[in-house]
Length: 217
Image (cartoon, rainbow, N blue to C red; front, side, top):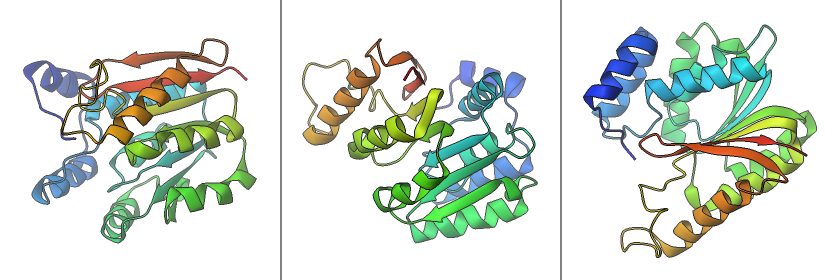
């Protein structure tokens, strides 16, 4: 879902998360295509802070889109760090490849093409990972969490975007504009990460909800 630029968000972005020309060009390209659904710059900076604080070196991203969040994260990696990003839409693959080729961190990025359900098992041989960032089809978040539980290291990070599901998670029942299965699956995803014996978790109240969990097992 598109982020709405408010005066407060605009202030935060200008002060702490200014885009360079490459990130701005990705943003502008998606706006022209009417698909401005990537994370905001302030969230990109937050991901960089999490990577830096956690000293994450190996990251999996599910949902590349045009590579905006990928580049934010890759720029926070230490020398020798790497991010594997999963992308299944041919048009998005072409866009992301174009922007990755222009980036100074292109050698730190591997884009894996195909549906995440098929691609993730292939990545298991590279486990353990320090962090996973989930920002793809919402109905599959629990599937991706199943994989993360097996392949993210103890004390590793599990981060997921859109976990307020357009602001509907506080409702008692799914609204008419949200598929019930998607709504219930996101509810289940959030409830799983609320298990204090397995995770140390909070949800950051961004416009769409950004869940950050430390895997304790």
